[in-house]
Length: 392
Image (cartoon, rainbow, N blue to C red; front, side, top):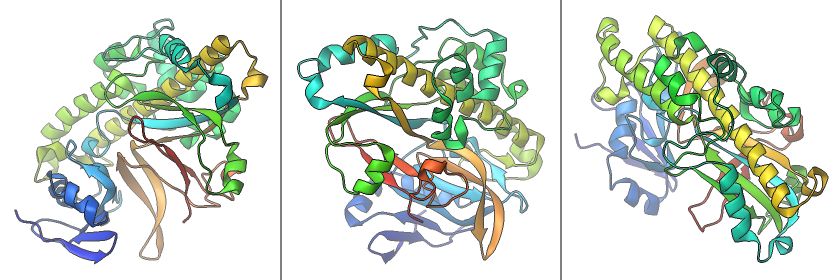
């Protein structure tokens, strides 16, 4: 199908409703970015997402979209539970709650002269990485893993791996409340029991950064970011545990769609009504995997923090470690948004896309209530990473 695309302004393009699309598609990009976006089928995927039952307003794509499973990576959509809205694992992805966290320290770049290579080696000895990497911590029992699924990052903190302030600086305080361990398969539990505190492979990373340039000193001061100071970026998710949850529910939903009379242009968009038994089970299992991911990043942060202190032979006070923020970019969550002048509870699918709440949003911690939510943008290897702020 040849899709019609209209340019609305310098940075916004629209795919008008055509074929079975229930809403238009919108892509945020300039001309240069659109040239690369047109090189694969991600635009077609934006249009395909617009076919989902109960979708509202638009199928949305961020400037860095590229081809994904069902949804483009960088795709966002909202579905209405009160109007036949569906939940689709393809809108979350296989790595449920893949996300990033950023921590700052008191360590100056000059203190690391001639030590960086050995420091990195020490950290990567402490934080296992690679395909199938296993935890240096003890293998989780079924009971402990169920606690991880329910408590999220709080589980790690209860084991002494962090502080309550870390929860305040984590999206959802590091825990989705509706997690249901009984909706998680034994296969998923077997894959997750020895992966807590592991980085994984692909584009996941643990990165040492130096604050190089500050654009807004007031915001930087509020975050504790100082020119020349060492920071640590972590990008990882729910590992094999989340992958298995996604795999399990894609299979079951593909079989259930006929029962609900749902048709989609791509079976990678398998979906069911949000309030169906299959939908509720997926949401419970997805929340459990999301909580595993938050516990995983919390654990890795603790391991990295200790590795730095051990290598530099310094105390926690000298290190001055502080979590700036942890935000996920592969998730489906219920949020309240204004739709046609009314506040509606919607199911927001974000795949390779992050929220960016403005100042005074109720879900922001006190430290950022007047500033807006920190938005963490990792760069490609060797390129700069950025910390942004939600503005409204």
